[in-house]
Length: 407
Image (cartoon, rainbow, N blue to C red):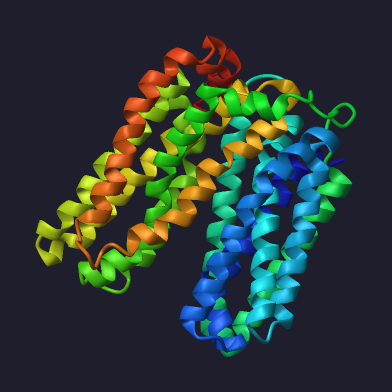
């Protein structure tokens, strides 16, 4: 009998493999298969992403009321509908509808995913369950990206529709695995107290954690949105370098999460996160310094900088979701963790605008992103004094588990 933990990891792997296959070709599908101009396609897809920002409050309410597993299953089915709508799209209206459905499903998914992982993991600190899930998701997303590259080279124009169809199938399989094989202990969580939304709005330490996490998430989204632009347009780097940089980042993130737990096992969660934020500042400095490096050495310098960036992400991500889960009150955990997703969705919306500043001044995006990470370092030092001591330490369970992984 497959355990709930194994089934959950398998479902998340299938979901991310499909997304890794489709997301790299999403705009290409809309422009080359549907036939929309690039400017229109980009605007419509971005508008759909913005529309998804309205979902987390509803997701949090539903997660507290019926349990996160049901909400995640519903999120997968909503994304199936979005992908199928993409397949049927032949104009702006249909593409807009598909983008909204996919964005809403994605926000519903991420807003309740960590509550579901927490339920399946059971009692105790959640650092290791979150880290293992992140490793599986990153590895499968990378595999999907490699599959996309192979599909484009082998299937030609048909590759775009194949990618969308496979993505729809991956969402459906994920929903099926979650519905049939994943069980959470106890009855569905009842609705939180009526004052829970007001409690969240007045919980200044948790709101500060959202803002600080958003400051650190901005470098990640800037990397995903802008590193190819910087390498090819500003540095005039060889065309293979963006793919190599993404491969290095994906590989380290896929393999290093549990190692990051071990290396930070004696640190407070906020301290480990602060080290990660400081490394993001160093990555920004290295990225900007590449302008002064001789052209022949720039690929090596940027690959080394990517290792620093990946280490920053491992240190920060190994603790941040576990800290949010530990701080959230049990009766309103769904609402809290759903609200916490704004720390990742808002930077995702802002990052393309930061990338667009390269033509204004090539140094400006790096300075803005580095400043955001630097402010996060300072903010974490202050925030640590306002969080419960039990939430700052991962606890003996995580130390023992991380040591076992290293052993």
